[in-house]
Image (cartoon, rainbow, N blue to C red; front, side, top):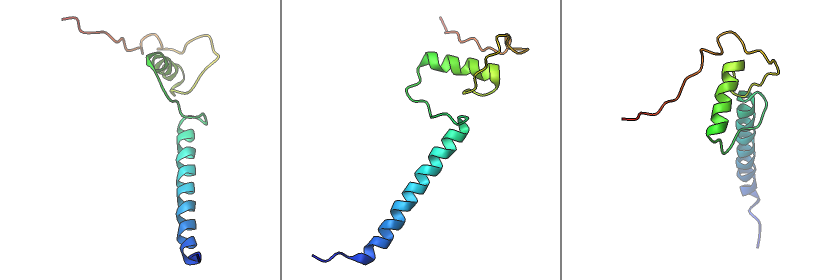
Length: 85
């Protein structure tokens, strides 16, 4: 059975466009996460730690080795309470 060679050009274009889109999406997500891979399966503990990191460094993926917190760290916390009515 003959191969329709003229169909390979659009197939190649589609394949390369999907590859380019996937690469650009991955690059964009990594750039937003300071070069680190995207987080999956984030639970309440991880969200709390990301909030702490955001308050310490200004970015949710940033981490610091400085043992002294910056000015205003004590007052920037949002206390999550439940409504007991």
